[in-house]
Image 1: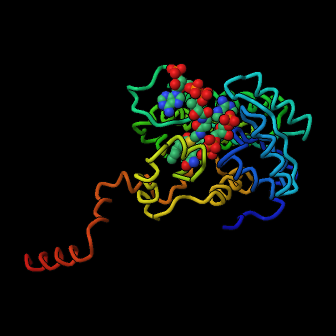
Image 2: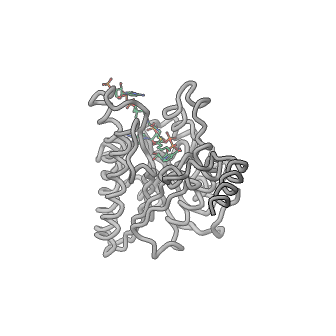
Image 3: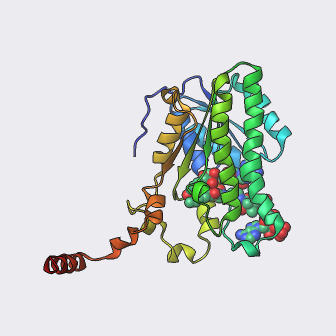
Length: 287
Ligand code: HXC
Ligand code: NAP
């Protein structure tokens, strides 16, 4: 799987990625570095960030700043913005990627468990967005937000209800600010990924033997999970100047998964060809 954009597409651009030390955030950041970006990665764990920053610098030759930040703490986000500007100057894009999630029947959750996920996903995203947006507006600088949601941000989903609530809020934030802040030349878009294997998601959403019982690929018309570079290509495009006229859009990248699972007759894929032959013959007899 190859990168899609022209080399140098992110030259002199500075991008902040929350949750950028692991999983999909790391992969998207790596690709933007390859395209010439200055990258800032944040999360709660400095040791993880430092390791990733070192690896990314070695792999790409790019510049990476790693700053600890719990996105539920507004002053820590302001610190990321200050440190980014001190190191690289102007900020061009913010990728709201950090999240928390786990599976559970909702009635088994404590109110603290519900809070923890909603606070990371929704409060963390609107805090980061507010701090970065105010900074761009005050300095009359353009900017681009890219928010990572999920397909169940629209449909809701049992067993991940706090995450569904949080992501639905992020979807509303994306569309609302796309309109309100367009006058400041600030774009807001989102990506709704289907399953992309990461340690963080798989360990929490398919723990223990579940990974053997539920193969996510089986639910997907294309019969495979996503490749990180496929997501990185889309994310880089949506944060680049090439997508300058796309604003308020949410792009699903899931191999057709959520449409298939919402389709009334999608389960007819289980009917074998012989049975279709038989049904066709019987239809013929009936005239
Ligand atoms: C029920 C749980 C739980 C679980 C934690 N809690 N895990 N309840 N089932 N599996 C409860 C705890 O008992 C506690 O409540 C409260 O939640 C806080 O737990 P802590 O462990 O103290 O929280 P913390 O250490 O801050 O960790 C936050 C976390 C953790 C969200 C629980 O999983 C985390 O750090 N996640 C970050 C990364 C992540 O989740 N990545 C996956 C994103 S994947 P009490 O009442 O006991 O105090 C994703 C994909 C979506 O979003 C779509 C896929 C297709
Ligand atoms: P991941 O590796 O666990 O990424 C989540 C990141 O968020 C971690 O780096 C984590 O770092 C950070 N984070 C959590 N709480 C934070 C906080 N309070 N402040 C700052 N950072 C915090 O999982 P992933 O699969 O790559 O997920 C990335 C994004 O994709 C998420 O938005 C997720 O909902 C979305 N997504 C993933 C999939 C999938 O199949 N993988 C599908 C749909 C959507 P720390 O723990 O160090 O803070």
